Amino acid sequence: MRALAVLLLLAAPAQAEPVSGYDFLMPETQALQDDDFANPGLLWVDQGAALWAQEGCTGCHGDATGSMRGVGAHYPVWSDERDRIVTIDEQIDYCRTERLGLDPLPRGATDMTALDAYVMHQSRGLPVAVALDRPELTEAHARGEEYYYTPRGQLDLACADCHVTNEGMRLRGEVLSQGQANGFPIYRQLWQDIGSLDRMIRWCHESVRAAPPADDDPVWEDLELYLRARGNGLPVETPAVRR
Amino acid sequence: MFNTRIRVPETAAAGEAVEIRAMIMHPMDNGFTYSTQGTLIPVNIITDFTCRYLGEVVVQVRLEPGISANPIFTFSLRATESGPVEFEWIDQNGDVTTASADLTVT
Amino acid sequence: MIDRRRLLAGAGGLAAIAVVPLPAAATPADAAAAITEAFGDDRPFTDGPIIIEAPALAETGNSVPITVRAERAMDAPDRITRMALFSENNPRAALFAVSFGPAAAEAAIATNIRLNGTQQIICVAETADGTLIRAIHEIRVVVSACTTLEAQF
Image (cartoon, rainbow over the protein chains, first blue to last red):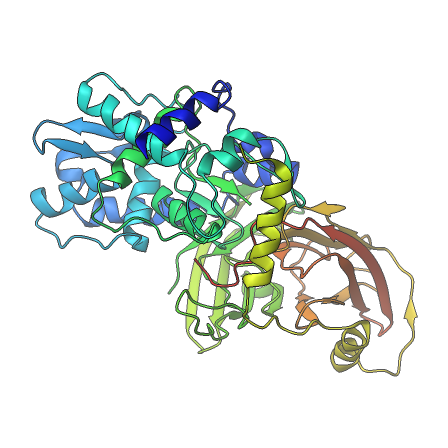
C-alpha cells in the first residue's frame, strides 16, 4: 500500500503554485465574499465574537482583534504540553474545557464553527504560515499527503484526482479548484451554511462515496496539517464564500 | 430571536435617499432537502420582513421558500428627520426577531 | 492518473446513485396561476420601467443575487406600490412579494433567490392607480460538479 502511494506521488505532476479557491469563482461570488456586510459567513463571525465574550476567552486573551491577529494562520501546530498535533478547533475547545471548565463542543457544532470563524477571521489577509519544523510535523504531513493521493470510495477517486491532476478543468459547469484551505470556515452556497474544514472533508468523502475516517482517527490532524500547509503563502480569507 | 446584521448610516441629509441593509441567520429550509439520515427536512422559513422609519413602513416583504438561506434585503428610505429605523422578522411559527438603529438627520 | 473523462463518468455515476425523489418543477402555467392568485386576472399587463438586474450566468442556483427596480418617482400618482417575483421552473412559483410604504425612497429591493436551473423569472408590479406592469428576465444557472447529493451534508 505504502509502495503504491509512493509510486503515485512520483507520478504526480510537480506541485503548482498555490491558487486560492477565490480565483476559481465568478465575479458575483467574489463580490459577496468581499462585501463586509453581506458576506453571510460574517453572521457566524458575529456569533463567535459574542461567544468569545460570554464564555470568558477575554479573561486570558483580551480583545481578540489584537491578541488573535495572525494566530490562526499558523495552525495546526505541535503542542509540547499535549504531545500531539493540535488544529485550531481543537485548541479552542481545549481552552474552553481545560481553562474555562466548559463542556466540550461536539465536532461540527455551530458554536464551535463560530468560534473557529471568529479566531481565523482575525488573521484575514495574513499569509497562511503552517510550520513543518520538527519531525512529528513532517511525518504527519507525509501521512496527510499519502491520504490525499490515495484513491478511495465507490468512485475510487483520490483528493488529488480532482484537485491536482484536473485542477482548472471543468467538471460539468464548474471549474475544479486546487481545494485550498485558506478560507475556512467557509460559507458554502451549496450548504447554505457555514462549514469548517472538517465538514468539507466529510462532504468530499461523501461525494466519492467513501466513508470518512473515524472521529478519533489521528489522520484527521494529518490531513488538516497537509491541507493547510499546502496553502502556505495564500492569504487567510475567513470567512470565504464558495460554491 | 435569530442573529441579525443591519446597516443604517449614522447620519443623513434631509431629503437624501439612504441605503439600508438587513440580514438574518436562518436556514430557510424549503421542504425539498434531506438530512444525512434520509429524512425530509420540513419547511422552516422566515415569512415576513418589515422595515419602518419613524413608525412608517419602508418595505414589507413576504418571503417564500425560494428566498436563499440567511435572507438579506437591500433597499432605500427617504431621510426626513432624526429617528429610529426598526426591523422586524417573523418566522412561520410567529416568533419575532427585531433590531433597530437610529438615523440622525442633519 | 485519472483523466477528466473518468471524473465525468464518476460524476454521472453519482447522478445514477441518487435515489431520492426530486421535487416536481413548476411550469409557466403554474407561474401564471401564482400571478393570478396574487394580482387577480382582470387587468392586462403593460410594459413599464421595471428593471431586473441579475447575472446572466449564475454560479449556483442556491443563491442568485437579484435586484428589481422601478424607475418611477415615489410621489407620482402612478408610483409602484407592490412588486412580486415568480419562477417558471422552481417547485414553488412565488419567490417573494414586496410592498413599498411612504418612507421608501424608491421602488427597488435586492436579495438572493434560489433557482432550480436555467429559467425565466417574471416580475409583476402594481401601481397606485391599479395598473399592472410585467417584466421578464432569463437567468442561466451553472450545473455544478458534485451537487447530485440531495442530503444536506
